[in-house]
Every structure is written in C-alpha cells, then in structure tokens.
Length: 244
Image (cartoon, rainbow, N blue to C red; front, side, top):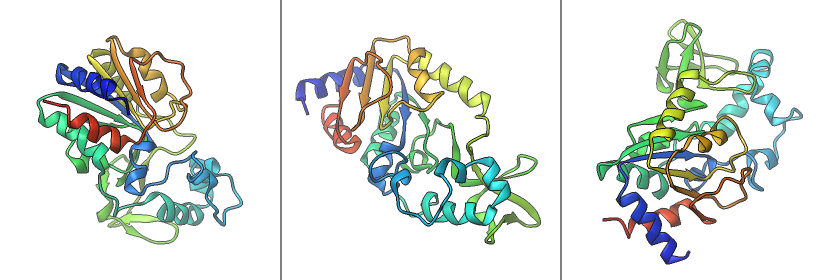
C-alpha cells in the first residue's frame, strides 16, 4: 500500500468529527463468513440445492419449503462462532477516539456490535435475533428450533433477516441517508456497491473526504477521494498506526 495515501486517510480520520461507514461482506470474510459473489462465495459453493440461491433466500421459499430454508440457513448463514477481525475493531476504536461513527452494514452477523460499535444500522437484519409475527424481537438464544420452525415459548418466530422479496425498513434507510449526508468522512469497506439502496447512499455524501477499501471491482464510478484495493484488516492496521 502507498504509505502517503495511508497517511492521508489517517489525516482525514484524525481531523473528522462525524464518520459514516458503509460495510459489505468483504469486512467479514476475514472472520470466516463467506460472501455471496466472489469465487469462494455462496453463489459458487457446491451445495445439494437444485434451487437458485436467491430463490432459497426468498420469502416465498421460506413459506413453501421451511425445512430446506432452515437447513441452508443453519449451514451457511448462522455463524455464531465468528469473531470480529481488525477491520471491525478499527471502527470501534474510532468511536473510542471520540468520533461520531455510524456504521451502515449490509451484513447480518452483528460483528460490528461484538467489536464495540454502538451505532450500527443493520439494513438486512441480523442472525443474532428472531422476530415473531407481531414484530416482537427476541435473541436467537431464546429460540427453540426444529427442522421446519423456530419458537419462543409457544410463539412462532423466524430469523430477523430481510429475505429476497421483502422490503427494507424505511426508518433504517432514512437514518442511513441522514448519517451519510451529515458526515465529514465517508468510509466504504468491503462492498462491490452493486446492491441498492446501500450503493446509492454514497451519492448522499456532501463532504470531500471519501475512502473506498475493497479487494474487487465496484459497480459504481463514484469519484472516491482515496481508494485501496486490499484487505480491510491490512488497511485498518496500516491506518491505525498513523492515527493520533
């Protein structure tokens, strides 16, 4: 990595007051959680499913074939043993420095909270929670599972994650737009910026100091002030050494 650009990124973060962070699957792959679209992602993983992945993770499939849905969910999405990596910890450390940090994540692993980040908008929900038909939220540990269902007491619950065919929470979108538009630094970490509305949030940024860190190509031609094609953890460790 270019040390001058690392120092510039650290300078922007040092002098910032409010930081908005958009994170994708690339932040959590180093914690052992697979992404969707890379060569090692879930789309390319050999499974016994004959149904396309987007269909398996859809509301319709969940209703029609809950046994197959839960089997895939437990084997591929429910990674309770995963721990935060240096990328997650870096964002929590920025908050400890007194920065106002809002993390807007497309991930469902809750590793940002595990690392210590307190202001996290989980656009697609979290495997750490389950939700009842009336919207009551419970922790995953409270649920009792069978092959075709989950219950808390006598109440039917399901994973609190957004499936294909379901709407995102409008309040989460509003809060995300507000956080990005009011930030003086925008960090985009580990996302190809192909999935909306998260990809579109970058256009709400009103500041000058935007940073992209992603190993692969992105789906937008947004003019980031700094871009790094490297691992999130390596970048985070390099910048951390320059922070004051």
